[in-house]
Length: 487
Image 1 (cartoon, one colour):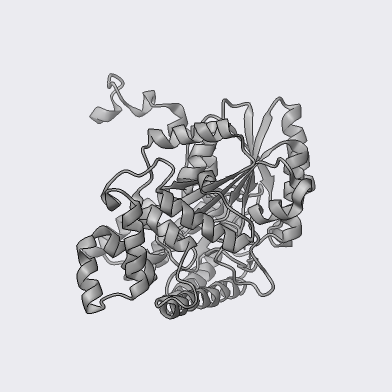
Image 2 (image 1 turned 90 degrees about the horizontal axis):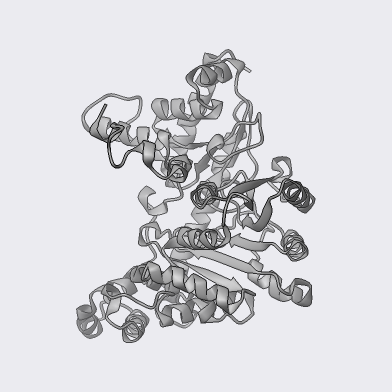
């Protein structure tokens, strides 16, 4: 027994907040911990059937070689080190619009990137986010209804803190879901109320099912506070139609339920004929039909074609929420002082990038299109390859950065997993890691329909590496099926 395990310790797992112990985050769970160990063992000279670990467990683009957008990094460099501005002007080190943008931010952010900002985020950055939302939707956005956050995750935490009072408060959450939601609901003492996406219909959302789950929960004494919609989907990669979004808005209005819109993959659209529609735009277009629907929309700099995960930037926009409630959110933000200022600037750049006619626009547009075209090719390569495997069915990756294939596993594998006290798809993913170095996430970590098995993988490895990932996965899958007695 270690010192930390001692029953006499002032702090041990035994006397921690049980909600902390209960919370799980599968995207960085046991399989990823093992992947880290394998990486260390490879460096120490231990032999594996592969020469490196490929992290396909999380949407972390730059860790897998995606290059940052030049305009973003150039502006950030000047904001972090303003002494470069004069020589940059004299020697034309950066395009003129980069210098202008950095000067604009520095003039409006007292103390620069090393000082606290307003708890909601620097005024100039919120102005630029509002401008970007207006360009996207064609409707006005108010900067004082926008909070800049350390990634979309902080926005989720803040809203959940306000909504959840005790276990009788329930949040309608899509299954499969991004584990941020199950974890925050657990941490703040609420109840996750599942609604199941229809896999055989492209992971579609059925409003009749939403209604049935809501009425059932209410009959059991639950108060259904909010509905989470992730669009484009994580982990599914599905894109909801505008008609479906309108149905959701009508449902939230009729049931007096808050709508939480996770829209961090809005720039990742690959399927022909598919289009992203923000809930903000849908609510505004519906007019009186959507009157009073309370909406929290979240976006992040971590995904899209920018992939600035480590900068932790994002925003939360608030629609139709009373001023005194917004005041409480402001108080929560103030307790944290402010989100990081570099992330705020990067969020402003994401929503207000170079426009046609700006000096940086040609390079920016070229970089953006090259990244999106490559992601589209990789998404298709991945799903096409998965669908060629025995017992595997994978819906088209319409958007986001993932594929989530359904896998039929041999009875022998299900029994072996049971003997180990693990989910069958966990066994599959762990053996995949040990045999190939590919780190994925079992579907059980996202929750799934009982009796079905899945795993989630990203399309983020560079195209040349993704070919190798597919080859290794194909060989492993065949061996795994044979090892456990076949299908």
